Image 1 (cartoon, rainbow, N blue to C red):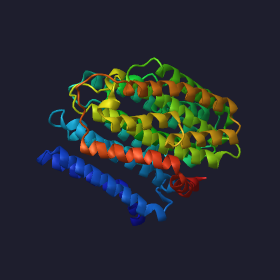
Image 2 (image 1 turned 90 degrees about the horizontal axis):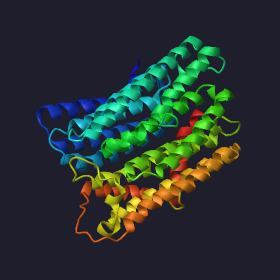
Image 3 (image 1 turned 90 degrees about the vertical axis):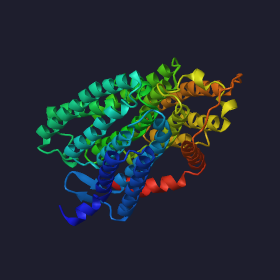
Image 4 (image 1 turned 120 degrees about the vertical axis):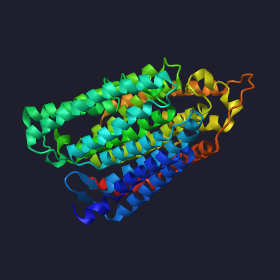
Amino acid sequence: MTSADLFSLQPMILLSVVILIQMMFIAFARNLKLTVVISVVGLAATLMSFIQLRDDAPVSVTPLIAVDGYAVFFSGLILVAAMAITLLAYDYFKNRGEKQDEFFVLLLLATLGALILVSSTHFASFILGLELLGVSLYTMMSYPIHGLLSLESALKYLILSGVSSAFILFGAALFYAATGSLSFITVTASGGFYLAGGIAMVLAGIMFKLSLVPFHLWTPDVYEGAPAPVTAFVATVSKGAIFAVLLRLFAGSDLFTLQTIMPGLALVAVLSMVFGNLLALRQQNIKRILAYSSIAHLGYLMVAFIAAGLAGGKELAIEASGYFLFAYFLTTIGAFGVVTILSADSEDRDVSDIEDYTGLFWRRPLLALSFTAMLLSLAGIPLTVGFVGKFYIFAAGVQTTLWMLLGTVILGSGIGLYYYLRIVFAMTTRVVSSEKTDIPIVGGWVMLMITAALLVFGVYPAPIIELINELILVMI
């Protein structure tokens, strides 16, 4: 490895050094506020180092890692999301007893795993990033120690995620048997039985990580039981990194030409959109509603992924995937941010039942308005960033004539509007209550910035679109 390769890896090296510094501070002087400051500064420094590499990209660091515009965009998205979740988690954990500092070490380790994933061009680095992300998440889900549901969610995710990782490993072995290599670019669509088996097993493992139907059953229980900041991380950073590596695997090889798998992916997308929205109708817990909503939204995202595999649709579909993920990150972190803020004063449970939000508008109008904006964005209402994201999905589907999938998107969006508005209705219901909800300063500013970004980029999305065209589309 040359000095140029080390320079290209400086963001990951820098984040690793920050993690070591965190561990040293925790060992000698426990201070939750200091740990959070180190985390945020480290994430910001890592983001700046990626921006510096923007002009030097693309660079291949051995056959395992590619530091290109695609990696820079998704790494930036992941790092900004991790910073927002870190700040929201501070007020959440500071009232939950001592020895909560290690959570933020785990969060940075999981973020490092996600960065490795989006830069992976080889199954070895793919598995390394996947396991670094997954093992960190198992422990993060068990925080804080007072909640039994958090231990249950961690155990469920540990068992089922381990099974899905085994599928991916075995699929990689079959890829090696078919091609003699584990590099993404050597994967071909003409590998016979071994290739077909490898694709099936890798896709099954990835679909579990993305919680697509029929691999979705873990999602509502894990979302409900895990601490709200962890749920936000799983729903955004984890899923975003997995989708990014899936898109790189297919776009970097000729697997998109293997049309025999497209009907199966289309069926998965349809089932995810339909079942995700229908099952959300019966839920009384907001975290479970958002879990089923995430299943549906990953189904929407798969429409763009399928469009990328059809003639003439790759450029628009990849652009649509990038913007939709940006919109999904923003709105999902904002929605779970409200749950995190309201749960800050509770030591043994998250405030996530719909009845807990009854009359929130009259107690904390700004927080209720922010939550309303997040829900309307998830529903795809105009003037929000979610509307632009869904418009892109429609445009990619129309260009590639995916009429059945577009019809399902319309149906799912209509169903979703009902359960989002049900939460809004509960918040605006006037009740007599002396309960007062305090909004922490840090969390309040984070929510203000997220809400402002949601509205600004919903009205004027050009800067993000130009950034996507400059960075992501170089991989085509």
